[in-house]
Length: 419
Ligand SMILES: C[S@@+](CC[C@H](N)C(=O)[O-])C[C@H]1O[C@@H](n2cnc3c(N)ncnc32)[C@H](O)[C@@H]1O
Image (tube, rainbow, N blue to C red; front, side):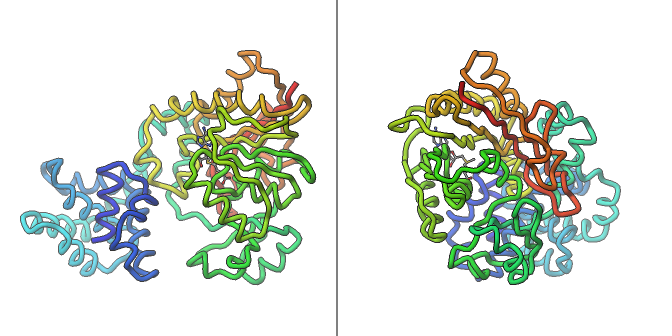
């Protein structure tokens, strides 16, 4: 029932999974194990929606009327359990049928039973990467990264990603790798698979580490040695990059528009015992008292680089989102430049795979004569990820990169110097 309602909130009402889980009282009341299973069903549907809907369409003579949202969600979650989660058929079918109104029970029962018999063969004949990727994203990624690149991205989105931790003290990586049973990756990320509930992991309560995808650690590192420098972390919540900069000895001002999200930064600072000034303000209008040494601008974006961790993004966002966000990114870039002293640095980054939210923004910035120049990023600055350095001297990670180690999120970053 809970998984069904999460799917209705996301796929019928356009809410994000995190919001849907937070708003669902029954979800909160479940045991940790049952919450984990409800979430797993939901993310499996979100990852495999194209395959699931194609199989369901094959089994249902006429599409379900729009208003039958409970039946639609139930069929999708039943299919996910039968075909991708190895739930025994009697449980997947019986429990799913019980969640739908009586007038559709016969239909849901018949369709799921048929899927139980024929589904495995159906899946074997499907092009999973293509079917599960929305058309606008496939077209955009094919244009930007060619068809093999688009396919590698879409394939990476099918699997549950590992849990990546950044250590407060990088010198302790080997110790924590042993204690947590993780793998210390080049660059300092500690990677865990099948980790379980985060707050219960060793080191969480004492703030020895925070959760941060390997790719998300790279932009702050592009500022080089930051000890003693005044740095604005513009668009700071939940604070992964603020923590990195503070741990490296910078004097950080963490600026964030959402007071509620800024609270997450404050909590993370308290847990890790790190220091930073927190400022609730719109970065487009806020300015520091005096120009700073550097700004790290992790701009709001469509988030298509984070689909493997947040598969709801690909079901909610559309082609209009990158276009809409580009205007905000331009305004924040102009503001960032005004915050920095001449000779100071700006790193602009987004967790987007869309060129409109990456290199296109910098091309437009330089074309309008902004007082900055690019400081190229060398492959040698990216331990174990040399392929992420682009010909233009920017950083571009793709979810299909470093696949043998478990991949990483899609990030774009550029490093600029204020003239
Ligand atoms: C990609 S997230 C930042 C992630 C963060 N840097 C980290 O590493 O944890 C973008 C953030 O920008 C904030 N934001 C959006 N528009 C903003 C604005 N005009 N000024 C400041 N913050 C803004 C959002 O609320 C969101 O928290």
